[in-house]
Length: 149
Image (cartoon, one colour):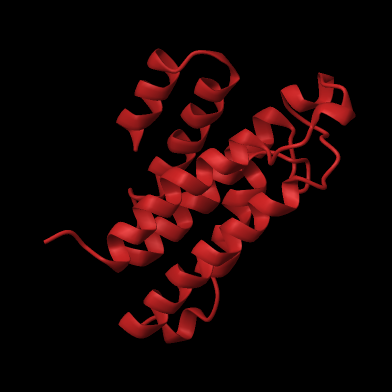
């Protein structure tokens, strides 16, 4: 995760590079004390908190945070039943929640990011940052649910 943070900060220009660098930097901390499913959930939580701290964006602002938080909420459910069935259930629910969160950005008023500077009449698509998270995190989750042979 620390390497991903470095790659994001040095290779992805603009605000996205900075935000992904923060996300992965925050996520890296979880792996120093946890492992397995708990580490991944904590990593997502730490990453979200760091992005919120430095960007001042919040869940509901029509940003990548909406999708990240939707996934985290589902991944944190029912921690006492995290056998393989429970983990699979949480992962599948996270995919659904991310898709719903992305769709909801269409009707949200932007309160952070570039969309705040755009004429509201031109915001006819879901938030691109929220959609980007759905793509990469969704693919990562699907690779756990259905590993490649």
